Length: 337
Ligand code: FO1
Image (cartoon, rainbow, N blue to C red):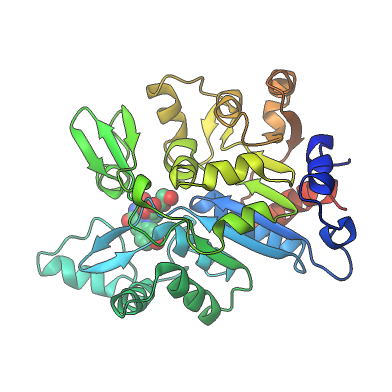
C-alpha cells in the first residue's frame, strides 16, 4: 500500500528538496520516529529495531513520570525504553529482569519509603543519571550516554531536558504522577491532568527534527492523557507532528474496550470519552493519518474511516519480541518506499 497521498505530495513539493535525496534507499536508511510513553512505546520501538535493524530509529520519550526518589532522579519511561531496547526489561515491562531488591529491603528496615520498587541493579542507572545531571549535563546527553553504555543503537530523546511533570487531579486533590500511579495504585478517579512545566519547556535537541525529517512517524500504544499528551504539550511538538511530511501511524492502546496496560480505559471514562479504540482515535484526529486497530476491534474500522483516518487492522498485542517485530514489520512493510 502506498503511503497516504497528501503526505507524499507534501514530501515532494512543499520543501522544494530533491526527491531522490528525500527518499530512503540503499544509500540512506529509513528514518523511523516513535513517540513513546513507557511499556507500549518501548515494545513498539523494540519491534521496529528487530523488524528493520538497518533503520535510523529515534524514540522520543515522555518525562512527565520523572520524579525524585531518595535524592535520585528517576526517569521511568526512558529506562523502560532503554532496558527494552537492550533486551533487559523486567517481567512487567519496567525495571530490570531478575533484579534483586536488597537495598530496598534494607532501606525499608531503616524506616525508608519502599512503595516504589527500585531494584539493586536498576539503582545503578539512577545513581549514574543523577551524578551526570548533577555535573550539569542535560538529560538528553545523559540518556545518550546511558544508551551507549547499554549497547542501544537507537537514538533515545527525552522530549525535553526541562522539568515537565505530570500532575493528576483527583477528588483527593492534585497528585504527583507516581503518587497516583504507584503509591495509590491508580485507584483515584482522574478528573484532569495538568502539565505545569509545559509552557517553559523546550523540546530537547533533535526532537523536532526527528519528527519533521522522519520517513515514518509511529505513535505508540501509549496512554493518550499521561503519555501522549505530555509529549504534545511541549511547545512545538504538536505543531511538528501536525506538519510532519511522513505518514503518521498511531497504534491503539485500547483493545476490546480495555487498556492493554495501565489506567487508560478508566481515564477515558472519567474524562468523558468513549472507552474504546474509537474514543482514542477521536482524540488523535489531526495527529495521525492511519489508526491501527487490534484484530478484535476490526468492527470499528468503518467508524475510524468516518473520522478521516485510514484504519489498519493488525495483531497489536506485543507480548513477545516476535509479536512486536511482526507488528512493526507489518506497519513498516506497508510504507516501504
Ligand atoms: N511501576 C509500578 O507499578 N510499581 C513500581 O514499584 C514501579 C517501580 C519502578 C521502578 C523503576 C522504573 O523505571 C519503573 C517502575 N515502575 C513501577 C513503572 C513506572 O512507574 C510506570 O510504569 C510508568 O511511570 C508508567 O509509564
